[in-house]
Length: 357
Image 1 (tube, one colour):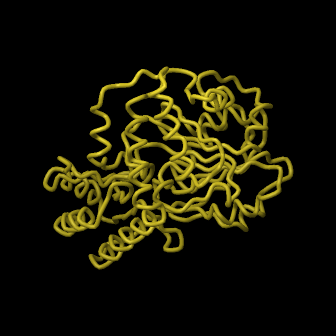
Image 2 (cartoon, helix red, strand yellow):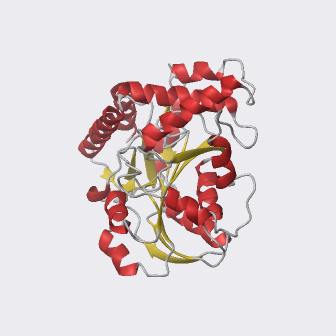
């Protein structure tokens, strides 16, 4: 099915049904046919987000969604609490600081997750929001967003979650868990091509948006919401029509499997991969209490070993995996098991890894 097997934390393998959608004739975006397609996408996004809230679609990578969540929600000088457990948590904080936010930071050592007590000990009355990454792609660690969201309920603070590498692969209930802004992207567990970011936004968050003084134009949440809520839903500007058609098909596949069956499949494959990796005598980098079901990080003490495995995996076995980030570049491999992935793909990856260690 695939010339190369993508076992990376994104982009991920794309089902044939989704690829076929990309080859169809393009729709003009100001037609009833497109509005019908866009309406279908919006309803399917609500299903995956587990929300009744508005979910906006923008042409961008996940990082664009993170930036959009900052510029729409805050004003220069606003104080927030931000948690970083890795490279992508650091990125979220960098974006907030670039736009002039006053960021108090909880820095967690790589491979671990934040605890609710650490947040309780750091949160202040003047913090307008708590922001964090749910699934840290650089370390394979998952933050306890359910506990945090329930703790923040009825507090006049926004809860903003980067779910780029988790939504659609790990359980998230936006409404039940009190998440005000939930951000993801098309190219990971949603098993679609890169190029779209999806942002769920609560009514409470939209009230914050009305007070924001940070300039924005293309990524304006209020303008996007107005066009989405028309009788015939639209985007403010030319959308990525083919990507929307493809992602709509991918979400349809998720619905057919059933969201909780999708979660169970991810959990089963993650556990199988890690169990076999441990049997090989290799070291799972992530704390066992924070393991992700969409990515596994494996660290190596021997210099050059991680790079050797990554390169040979692609050249000899046609399997693409990811290396380490930051100070772990060359010391870690990261195997993605999200989206369009099955047991046969896991077995093939394990076979290759066993022959390279």
